[in-house]
Amino acid sequence: MAENSSDICREQCFHPDTVERVSCAMASREDLLAVAELFKALGEGRRMSILNALLRSELCVCDLTLILNMSQSAVSHQLRVLRGARIVKSRKEGKNVYYSLDDRHISMLIETGFEHVREERGDEL
Image 1 (cartoon, helix red, strand yellow):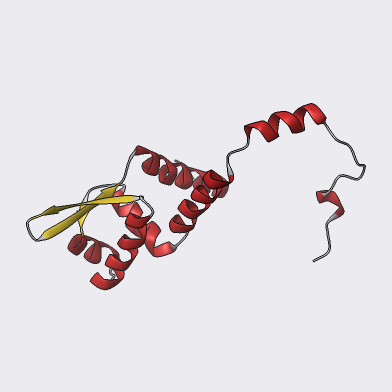
Image 2 (image 1 turned 60 degrees about the horizontal axis):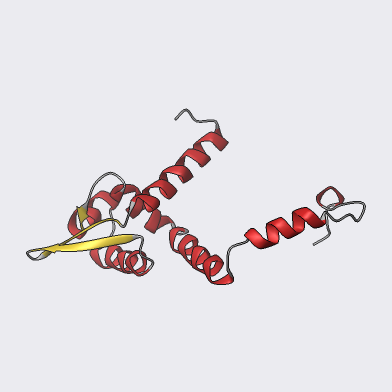
């Protein structure tokens, strides 16, 4: 792919103070990879549908299958991925398993994502 000349500096220049400050403030490679894995888990449409529902209420797998018109095995598979990424948590009540978002950070990520795409589209919030 050819580089777009408006995407690159046309003259070489460096800002040592800025480079040093940013380099020292960068997250560790371990943290970068962990965040990339988090976003990878969030980056699938069926999982986002599940999270959209769980943003509104704790739900059992049966309720999720009805709300999302998905099979129980499909919902369970996606929930395993989300649970493994610590995006959702589960609790057993009798023979049923209820899911909710793991913590407020996950809620904030999802809500911020919705705000971002709505603003980009020009939708009213």
